[in-house]
Image 1 (cartoon, rainbow over the protein chains, first blue to last red):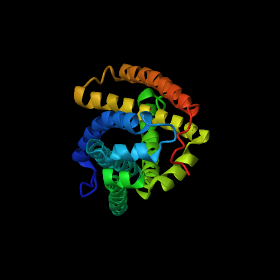
Image 2: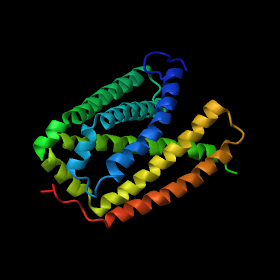
Image 3: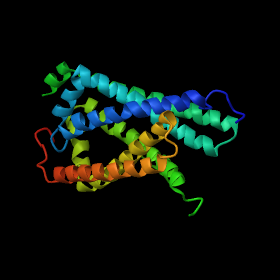
Length: 124
Length: 124
């Protein structure tokens, strides 16, 4: 393990993978119940949007977004790191994972923040 | 016993495969959910497509991957932080038994939803 530079993963990456994994399990259960199970079949916009307009569910979904993206991309980086050995390529994959993560986070945050009680009242 | 295909190796390999599959779903899910921000009509159109039974098959595979990844992940965390190395093979099979029970319950719920009336009020 010569590569200990940026994006090498290391003990901190290992530790946060476990922390986010532990946190994701209960968040996923709440997400599945509130956004999928306790809504009508076909997920009507008014029901899902109303949930996301609620500040408590909004905060939960933002945490879900951040932890899931981190856990998924960090995991993918770890898997790729087992097959890609050249430091240059590792850095490139690390950079790509960061960019994809930031773009998807921004995409998700725009969605979550666009849903407000005023917006839902106006749409219905 | 085969030294390559032992329980620990298969568990580790499946964790990677299910992890990558769930990450792919996460990216697709963020894209689908962004239609919420585009209003009831845009979201309704996407949901009408995704309410077809073929997607329930994908969702059943997804819940299987998520259950495996979560329960195997709990085993990994237990080994890493609790140090139950000697009993981890047994822990793995206990987790898989819990997984099978939860999978059956989840599939029961999802197939039941298939026969529930689709909420059509806001679907154009």
